[in-house]
Image (tube, rainbow, N blue to C red):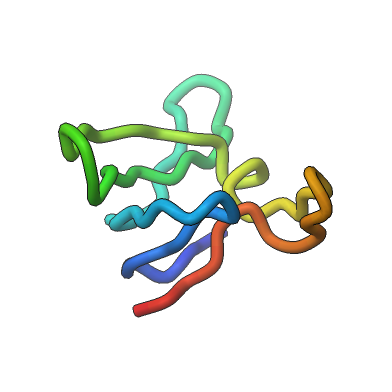
Length: 69
């Protein structure tokens, strides 16, 4: 599984820089490695399935994150 590195926007409006996808050594679950492009610029991981899923919330229906650059 893969996800192109770049700048992604969360459906709530904040932007993040995705560095790549890695796999957990024991569970083999794929995770996205990224950092916030605001506030403290901290690094995060999130399961790839959650990062790429569609959400329906507060009148929005679409991808949780979408690539902008």
